[in-house]
Length: 579
Image (cartoon, rainbow, N blue to C red; front, side):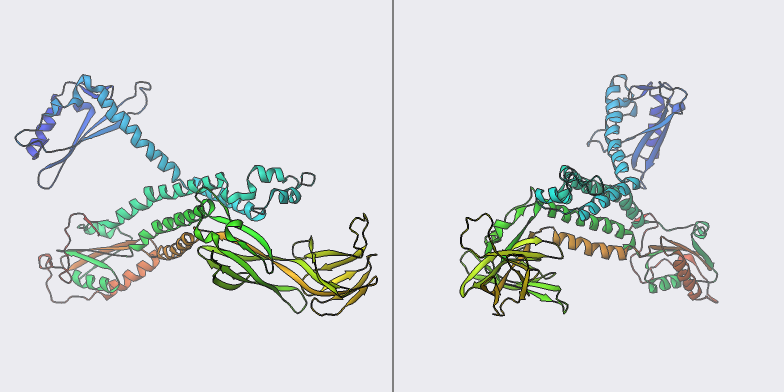
């Protein structure tokens, strides 16, 4: 169809009435479409045809008593090639008997494809589904906090034995079988995160974006009765609409003026903020997922004076994990020491670390402690634990000898022990010797071969102690530092997401307020609405109403008010869109 005026539109309707048989898919509408069909023609202001819609009510054959459904089909309007004329509507294949298959494809096939995404979006954007997803994720996060993560299978065998289940049912079979030892990287956890992200995007697409689109689109109201029906409305006698506009601009409104009508708004950012909140949540989840499947982690206990390679400790988290050149960096434990409270309990423990490149050159040196890690090339080294690796002694003036310390008790009340044999013959099945116990690096307790307490010595005090005819001097207690290494590429993304979440959450409290006004003779009809803080909006409008000056002895004319408040942009009274 080409350029059509109103007369041509009437001709189209006449052509519709002359069509012998109408079909919708494989359903016949009969020979009298005027009784079953409706036609709607929309014209542009220039008289050009914009679109042409055919509407019909069809009863389903399977259920004749069921209420008929209204079906519609909009015909695209295109300009014909130069030198040709638009075909008559009666020639369009929509009305021919042999085109029912094409019509069915046009209405049925595309209709199903169009409806399917909408149904999926509607399902994903439903609030009950989102609440369910958050509830399940919260439960899994709680399990991940309760059950130790990333430990060896032997740890779970001992922690959750089958003969003594935790809470009567939780054993290592449940923990390992349901991947509860690594909840945050389990497929079902990551799948729920993806599903929640899809729900957020669906909600943004179906709810938030349309709301913003509506908020950005506005029209001048030219009906005083319509303005008076708004949430806050007033008729101001002997007032000038330009004075009202100046007061609105002073209150932070963007004001548009044309002839005798006015529109103003402020706080549009409050409409955009929910989209920002959703985007921030998606950013947080993307960062967490990236950390789960794209990072590295590892832990190691290193005695003072020894070293290790970063790449030997770090293990990949998932399929996106890729090694970096800094894995070849060597970490040397220069010194480990502990701070104590006055009562002797451990207060803080520190480790002096030196990093060396492949050439042996020192590239970084730092003392780390709990909550004060070392960061290098994206790798973070945390201070997490400590132990005693060895005890250095002199025996009868000979030495020094290093005795390896074994962990007898872990947790908050650590206990370490070693054994000093009295005889050099290691073939004895029942060796005799001295037992030495220590809870920290401050002191050691010594027992004779009968297990009787002998005394306490501080390492490095050089005070000998005689036990079963042997003189022992405790030179030093060599500590070991427990370090945890992580390469977490998702941390910057998560931090950015939380920053954006805090900002957009604050912005979301901004009210989006709109005001319309109309000059009717010497009176101004003004009204407005707000999506939040309605009481505050009403108080603000009342203050503006009271501040509008009363015009005395001046004749008002709508025709004299065709300029803008400050010769600004004049908006058309037709529907406008804020840029």
